[in-house]
Length: 264
Image (cartoon, rainbow, N blue to C red):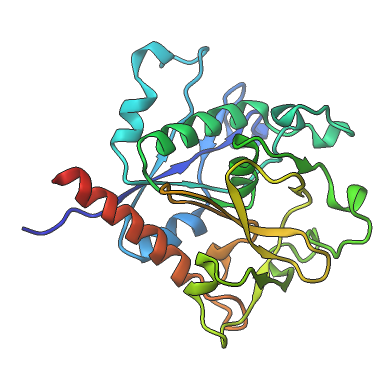
């Protein structure tokens, strides 16, 4: 019998105040970024955006359990987007523009923990890696340039997804084992926040060699939880960038193993 395609949940980006010209006055938009969905689908998995639940929406939280939502999926990808709110890790914003999206933080933290409880794999991209870190008790630099003036530019608003830098893997980690010595180690960098204090039960799998900024993390133990500060979904068209296939295949293999275990 043919195996069913893997079903991967993708956390939603939230737009709380859409521009009037879009035609959604006084509405909240929940959406995904095409590149990350296509990156997952290219490897044969189905992608479903998981809407956030809101007490003010027509869908009340009592209408559906988060357990049932997660039970329907084989894995979770936490996509990039708005800043993490400093309030989510016990701080106040040092500047108003760094206030982040507290509502999205709560929604994604709840999703993250339910996937962990059900022992289903989680992969975080950029904001997603930071979300994993704070969900496990870590903290962030609210702004790299402000907190770490010695650091290289991890965000170039003019270059945006053409801004890149080198990374180095921590020897003998899972990430290190996925690549051979000839692999390019250059990645797309679009972030002004970064991991400061590492969360509980996490290890560092990659850093920026120029300044030591953490670029990849993984959770210890049986749960498959990993996060990348860079954007692997933007790497497919440039052979000089780190090949994004090994990390996606590794994630989907973990999801497949979990699916098969549940089916027994």
